[in-house]
Length: 80
View 1 (cartoon, one colour):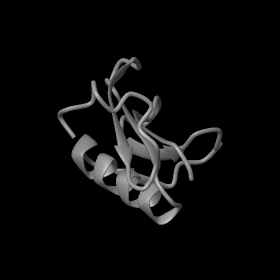
View 2 (spheres, rainbow, N blue to C red):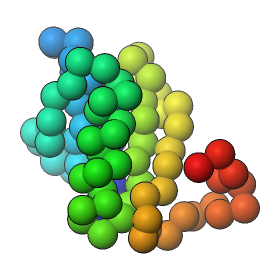
View 3 (cartoon, rainbow, N blue to C red):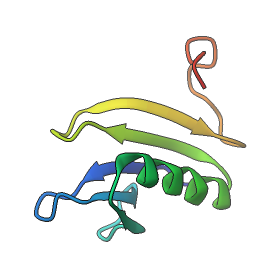
């Protein structure tokens, strides 16, 4: 089970899907939507986990649990 972050690369401005704690991104993408889709695929392939989507400025704007990961707040997470 692995958690992933979708962030905008500081220098290039390209979106990246990066495993939590990793130094290098798992992939670089032109749009945030592409990076989010890839991060969810990476998380699913590693047994589930959390995908945290960041705003271009850095703060987390959304988080999604990918099955079969355990959602830490199941009653509150109604949009996914």
